[in-house]
Every structure is written in structure tokens, then in C-alpha cells.
Amino acid sequence: MDVLLYLIPVSLLLGLLGLVAFLWALRSRQYDDLDGAAARILFDDKPRKETPP
Image (cartoon, rainbow, N blue to C red; front, side, top):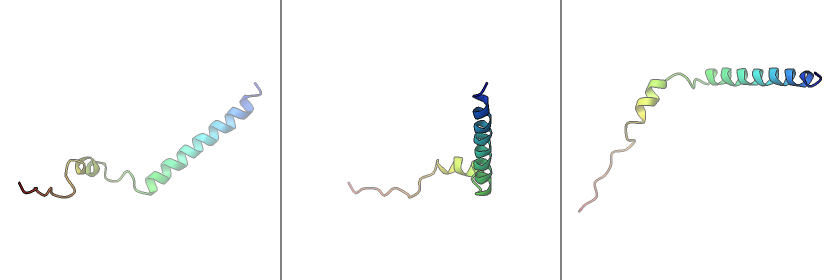
């Protein structure tokens, strides 16, 4: 039972750390354009240049 005195604060600290990381991700706008990123992978960045035969 003494181990619970250590595990409960550690679990609360880890939960708080996860919440802070999630809120940071929201504030840094990482979840704004999910559809655009999914479609952007389908297009090439630069058009390919044909090599002369």
C-alpha cells in the first residue's frame, strides 16, 4: 500500500504533462488543416524534367 503514495502523484503528473502537451499542440495550430495535408502528399513539389534521349 505504500507504493500507492508514489504511484498516484506520478500518474497525476504524467496526466498533467499529457494535457499540457495537447494544449500546446492546439495553440501551435497543428490540427488546423488536416484535409490539406492529406491531399498535399498526392502532388509533386516540382514538375519532373524530361531527360533528352
